[in-house]
Image (cartoon, rainbow, N blue to C red):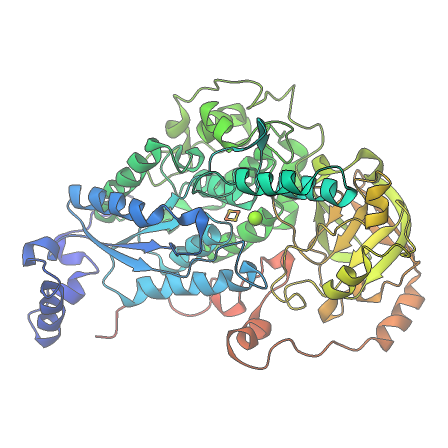
Length: 578
Ligand code: FES
Ligand code: MG
């Protein structure tokens, strides 16, 4: 049954602005204090614009201007725009990791919406955690919401070579450690790798998560692929501003859009994009917020079915997001995996996914590949299970050297990140290319915040000898721009006594990606003995946000949300206390 359209009287903001009482007087007079006439805001949808701009977030530098384009659209459609700044979470600068604060931004988004006169919301994000955080908050708040992705930055350039965010930094850092490029080269790379505002333009977490936002149906069609510096991006911002006003009248909420099939579509798209491993954690969390939880098994199933078609680094070998946009962008890619999508899923456009992509075309078959010529023959992700990771862990098979996809080797264990950093470049480190590097105490509790430490640096002496990949295992995450045979998200994490805590240097570890298995070759009796001897590390926090975080954070296979923010806890957004 179709929902009744909202009327002037049933707008949520009418509770603030339409009452003929002292509170209503106060609200109206204080808006008029800012120079607005009553007709500017009374009876018009109040549109919050959650802007994650800051002076130290290069990925969102253009949001200071773009927000004016969103406001222009809101005004054109008869709405009343209200910009509300929210924590920016710049991936490169926030320590120890933005992941510590994803749930804080999600809470902030929810509470900003809950506490203000808001009928609908435009979410401005893009840098890694900002996308899931804003969507999680808006999902819990429940008012109509549309996501405006920041867009990828332009391709990097150095000596006529294309440079990709993150991926080429890791690559050339190894060359610098091996002594094959000069200090001047390194400086020139520093100045050439990030040429415009916008998020990382490889298939990192940002490009993955904005594509997922679009696949779920929370952005305008094609929005996630538009480069930040392209004038199409400005027009998309204004269009989102216009559309959210209509969505308020239609009462088209996240709950109308985010169904189980939307998340299944998102997982299929993630696989076709050769996604960041971080996608798993964020989609698990968001789907749980939406009340239709997906699991690691959904990712594992899709990884076996859906081919990786986006030939974008680091899984692909040549191209970046700018090329992906010129090749037709996400709508074009979705036409190639239409068999794996539910095209009847509703989107913020008011049309179905199928209607959104009906006219899309691929313009370059090398960038957006066909199923018989995928970007990699390996699946985008694989979920491994075994006695070392009873609740699962993940690897990106397309980014590994083939020899490591089935490998047994002795563990070289580092108890924490500082211990690893102090040892890894020592010439006397007892390590061979067959060793399995193990890092623990890097998970949600132990990191804390599950930092992107999972692409452990290779021992310097092996890099000098020409080694460029080794098997690495941790309870950390890794950047979506990273690559290599890195087993990540081991759950439960070592800090809470997961089996990773029991590994000792010299133990044999076997990984078989085809069999989806990971095994610590130590018998159960010995593991039980070690477990009995294990003592938990001291708590990471004694006060503040971190204290709350450590009491409520979930494990990786649950999406790392706070237990009290998952769906089913507490009442939905209700009457404001006025
Ligand atoms: Fe912002 Fe990579 S640093 S997306
Ligand atoms: Mg990243």
